[in-house]
Image 1 (cartoon, rainbow, N blue to C red):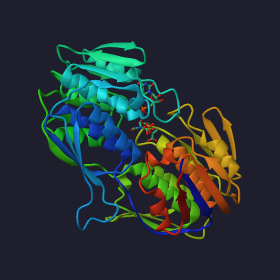
Image 2 (image 1 turned 120 degrees about the vertical axis):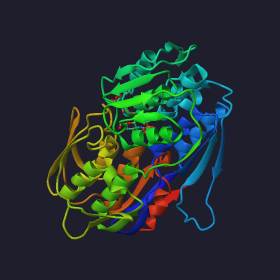
Image 3 (image 1 turned 30 degrees about the vertical axis):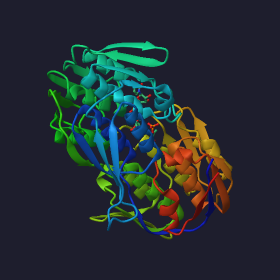
Length: 429
Ligand SMILES: CC(=O)N[C@H]1[C@@H](OP(=O)(O)OP(=O)(O)OC[C@H]2O[C@@H](n3ccc(=O)[nH]c3=O)[C@H](O)[C@@H]2O)O[C@H](CO)[C@@H](O)[C@@H]1O
Ligand SMILES: C=C(OP(=O)(O)O)C(=O)O
């Protein structure tokens, strides 16, 4: 298993290109199942999750052509995927693939809508909470599907097709909103989603489906209206920039000090996190090129933050913010409201000398003057990158184990950071 070695203490200076968003690319690839024509996706990041989803879609008989770099493209240009779901040969998504990635469960919506049936293993993904799929299944039931759970698989059938309905989500769920939007796009009649997720990745999915001939309105607000159409056609769509990658590198610069342009970043996708970073003492400038992050001289100020659905502070940046606050001049409080077990980075950050006290869903972080390098273990995707942020500021050497978690969601992390002056290397094996 690969490890990452970091010798901390260097400020970050330079430019970091922001990749396409993992959490938009995955549902967009799945939306390829909705049409028998080609869906071309640009700016797809090179990530382990994308490669795994290619395999999962391949299992359904979908042809995916990957166009890498074109002459003149820079080294970080995203890939272009041509997804051709002309024929779906198999409507089963097996345990050994789905158990490795949460988002792969979402194939259930388009398979059911287009083929009238789907057999999908219950999902896996980051171990950050129990993460049931009841909202997905209730939404599909409301659209007329018959659902059974047997031997770890969800068996969904809609032999007469799906019918539009009013669906009120009991709690905001990004994944259940994706599932409902995809299924309702090919249902008969109108579907109204209430308390839908407003995340930019939901908007990206709905915009892409509209480019395919779908009729979705209200995406980005809690009420989404979907008028089902008999068939969707091919389209070309570019994946939006990754707001979590943007926030992560912004926090890394706030942690180490320095001056970095996050090129291609869209600051409007992470206002709440940027407000928090400003409070912590980072200087942020938005331009046509992206987002410039600076912290020179002044230290890190403590913050109080609760995670919340969009437009609130994203749970996917909670671990990274916690790493930053370990060196604040004072006491910070971070409350996690989305997932009940998303604090596994706490004990690892403590190995660097961080002082964090956990009480239920709230972490109290007493900033320390210095962190010291240590061997640490990545436990999930965002937790792993919080350890990278800690190690970049810690004195001496750190070794981060189990970095396969990082590879799920961060493209060329070592290259991007070392180009800005970090001492970071991957040790294979
Ligand atoms: C691939 C992807 O895009 N993953 C993101 C997605 O995950 P994901 O879509 O899995 O997360 P949800 O928004 O669905 O989860 C929100 C909350 O709802 C609960 N819930 C969800 C569905 C359900 O059927 N029943 C239920 O109880 C979850 O346990 C959690 O407490 O949104 C999360 C919240 O922004 C992010 O942290 C993940 O990075
Ligand atoms: C939790 C995440 O991913 P997943 O939902 O695939 O586990 C994430 O992207 O932070």
